Length: 390
Image 1 (tube, one colour):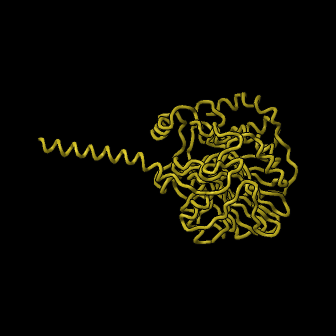
Image 2: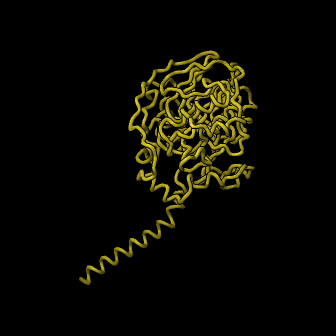
Image 3: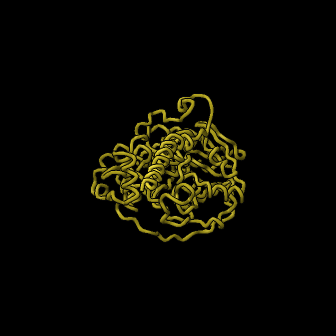
């Protein structure tokens, strides 16, 4: 018995020592220095930050502790509306190229969109993995198949990667794209280090910097309001961004990435680069508590309408909803709320309405839009059509 107690006691002591070492060593191991560079108005020499402040992105959505939030999320004990297990998708097979100033956009799911114009094939935040999480093993599972089968993708010329969260930077997909097509990958500072882990090369730029792709076609990395991390302890070691792709005719492309409203000035900064023909604006993952309409990191339909108005975009496709269950709103709440708000604020609902995953959309050249009236948004949010949505 004494020997048994000694063995058990020794094992417990070893476990305590190993736990203590893990608590001390693992967080440092999981931290990464993705970028080194000069201090700026959004980089302190070690971490990036939002110029308007980060309090709303550090706060747990819905309040409470991080551990409690994760536990409620994993156990489903949080009062979330039930989502469908699977939503049918009819994948399409895009044309190899779209020439001239004709533009065709196909929503693949979540923040992944294929844009074809001027002979370029462009992908935003490409994710074909079944799960959005580490090692493709944990994390939310997609409820919609990709709207284009990977093997049916045309040759990809340009990839835009907005930040390093797993539902936006999918190393498995990027590795396959790199092996097949060697596309030009453009991202914001530090994320090239993550992408390089799979052997792919990316060009990392700061807010306001641009890269020439072809004569008359540039990618400009633009500001938004978010944060970055792969492991929690590496928070804000890499930058987050939106993008403008400028074209010589027809109008520009704007990709918002993943964003909260922040100071609300960044949409006008993107619009100053030229008329926006097509904007890709997130509308989902906004409700983490009953009645919530936005989180610090994500805009819901309410602020998506504000962003659309401030971009002065002719057409927008709502993204970041209906593929991965990341928050507590019902599956179809974001597009229903968006449609109600566009009508209520006097905008043209057809100019910013839900696309069908896998359905190619012809995007007309830029014409001045009928903008929604931001002054009406507050009143529109109190209508029963909005307040009764789960």
